Image (cartoon, rainbow, N blue to C red; front, side):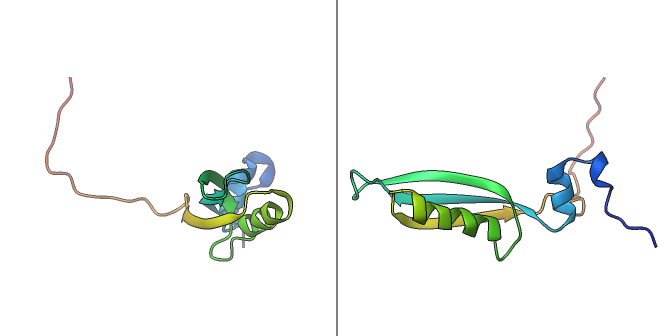
Length: 98
């Protein structure tokens, strides 16, 4: 039986990762400014990751706590599988363009 996964040499790395179950994950990271700890700064991180474990995000957050002075306040994660069944919806009218 043939594999449904496309050959790697014909598709981009990101597309191949989506076939392997990775989703596009976005994290909003709030952290305390090192010189002004009462102020928060926002940082957006985005990469393909495996839901719900998020190993890539956890690796990045481990690096952050080890190497960056800004203490983490909170992390909010959103993700979306870009390869999914087509979404269809009914329309209310018919429009003709000439």
